[in-house]
Each structure stands twice: as structure tokens, then as C-alpha cells.
Picture (tube, rainbow, N blue to C red):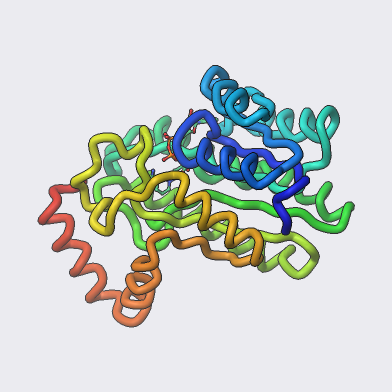
Length: 255
Ligand SMILES: NC(=O)c1ccc[n+]([C@@H]2O[C@H](COP(=O)([O-])OP(=O)(O)OC[C@H]3O[C@@H](n4cnc5c(N)ncnc54)[C@H](O)[C@@H]3O)[C@@H](O)[C@H]2O)c1
């Protein structure tokens, strides 16, 4: 798809990767960039910088995701590209409370399902559209020290695959963003952690990778190219991959 002239929604646009995406789309001449976030002040600051619009969103609520889509389509323009990017990180394992598991499940997974549920039928009626879903390399390779994050990001990749399989031949573009560490509030203090082993990228560079993939209708967005090698190593010898991950866990102590 072509970014110039299009109507784009970015969730989690107050800061980090979402802010980088919103800025990039504005630079490339998008007609409308809607910056949505639970932090409305932050979303407004991003929107003010780029001449966009800010709207409140709680990505963990279906009503809120639906209202965002309806508001944009009714008052701004039909959405060409929806970037389901808002996400949270919850550290820990099975001891994490059910409430916290549910919260990260809703924000990291169900927000993608709800966006598709309320937007893809509209896109299909007008012949197409594009969904960019932010998952993570953790959705392909898991996350040492953070079971709720690794599990929900796997589910996010699974849902994006399903979307592409089901609608990708009917005019829907689908990309799933799977970076390792990116500099943001989420990774503050994680500069020397296992997730940063292959370097911490700037959101601006990650946004460049996303644009390239969207323009070329490529499914998997891998700003850290090493991730593909790790995926291949995992597929070719699962046992050896688990042992390697255990060694990393022992070395980095769960972070
Ligand atoms: N930073 C990384 O290293 C990294 C790596 C891989 C994937 N990701 C993913 O990228 C996405 C963006 O992360 P980031 O690094 O920019 O983090 P960030 O914490 O800097 O930004 C996340 C944004 O999402 C918003 N948000 C959180 N919960 C929300 C909700 N319920 N409704 C609406 N907005 C909400 C926050 O207010 C914030 O503006 C996330 O999905 C994250 O999992 C990040």
C-alpha cells in the first residue's frame, strides 16, 4: 500500500515505537495520522508535533477499540492502515496473578482481535486495507523472565498469521512487527539485558522497516535480521534451542 494520502491509526502512539510510526507516516505524507493511546496527553503531544489527531483508547477494552474505529471512520476518513501497536510488558512466570495475565492477554492479544473484528469487514467491503500488528521477537523466540509477555506475543503472531491466511488473498495486507529490543519506556533499564543482546534499535529505524514491509506487502517485519537465524535454528533442533535459551537464562538471571 501507499502511505502518502492515506488514513492511518496508530495505537500506543504517545511514545516509543508508536510515536516513531506516527512521525514516519506523517513525514511520508499520510493524509490523516490518528494517534490513539490510554495516555491522551502523550497522544496529543505526538499528534501536535505531526499535525495529526489524538484520540483516547484503552486497547484492553473491546468497546474502546470499536469506538476508536467508528469515530475515525465516521468523522475523519475510512481507515487504510491500522497499526495495533499498544502493548505492555509483565515480568514473571506462573506466579503472576490471574488479573495480570488477563490484563496483558487483553492488551497484547485481544486488542488485535477486536481491531480486526470491527475494521476488517469494513475494509473488505471497500476492497482492501492493511493491518500492522506489533508483536515482538518474543512471539517467535519467547522471552526469558517474562512468561506473560512471551505467551501473549506468540498469540499475537498466531492471530496475525490467521488474518493473513484468511484475508490476505482478498485485499487485506497484514504485517507483524517482531523486533528484539527497541529504545522506549518499556525497555528503560534493560540496556544490558538478554533482550538487548543484538543491540537496541531506535523507534525511528523500526518505523522505516515497517514502512518498507507495508509498501511491499511483506508479512514478517524483522528489524533485527538475526531473529530469522534464531527461528531457523529453533525449527531445525528444538531441543538444542531450549538448551541454548537455558544458558542465556543462567547468564542473564531471568532478565
Ligand atoms: N521496546 C521494545 O523493545 C519492544 C520490542 C518488541 C516489541 N515491542 C512492542 O512494541 C509495542 C510498543 O512498545 P514500546 O516499546 O513503544 O513501549 P512503550 O511503553 O514506550 O509504549 C507503549 C505505549 O502503549 C500505550 N498503552 C499501554 N497500554 C495501553 C492501553 N491499554 N491502551 C492504549 N494504549 C496503551 C502506552 O501508554 C504507551 O504510549 C508494544 O506492543 C511492545 O510489546 C517493544
